[in-house]
Length: 133
Image (cartoon, rainbow, N blue to C red; front, side):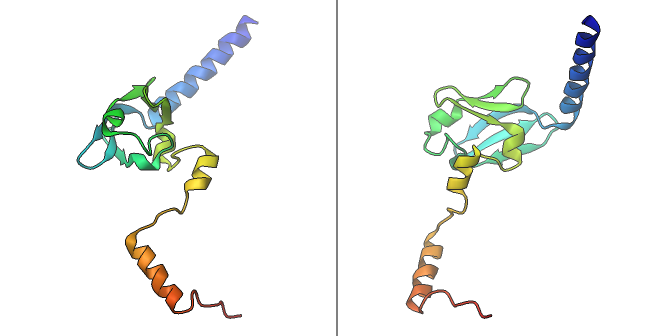
């Protein structure tokens, strides 16, 4: 039994070393009010930034709430205590800003005054042209 436990521990340690060498980890995190971005300095010297309105749980947070960002564990996540929000750094860097259900409800919602004006102009012309066979 002890041999199985030792083997499992060895495998876990090996997996941990591989993750530590290959996965992004946060060295520091902060909210920049001027750019309205959460900025994460990575241990490898790179910087990752994202607008908080894209992330589940941060979309309506105040600047002061966003500024209270903390790094989770060994740098694999971000945490906002007051908002009760935890986000995975590898997930954020892969463009995953929330749960699958939340992402499905927020994908493709980008709107702007220019898009609205173009839509009105297109509608005045009879709408979207039909596809030809």
